[in-house]
Length: 77
Image (tube, rainbow, N blue to C red; front, side, top):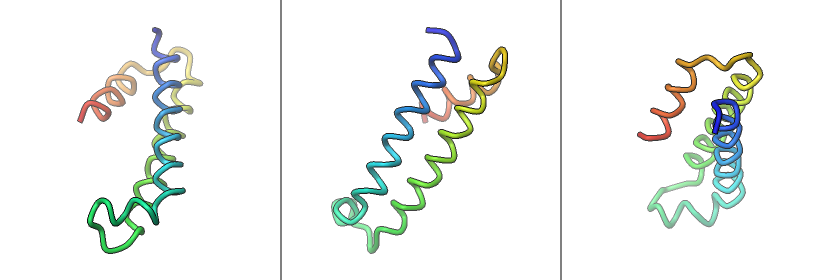
C-alpha cells in the first residue's frame, strides 16, 4: 500500500471513529465512567481535525515522508 492510500484509509477510519464518538456520546460516556459527554464531543472534533489534516497531506505530490511517519507513530500510541 502506498503512502497516499494509507493516509486516506487512516483518515477514513479516524472520521468513522469521530462520528461514532459524537453520535453516541450520550450512550458512551457512562460506560467510560465520565461525568458528562463533553469530553467525547471534544475528542470527536479533534479526531475530525486530524482526519482533515491527513486528507490535506494526501494532496501533496508526493506526501511528506515525515508527515506519514508522524501519523503512523500517532496511531501506534
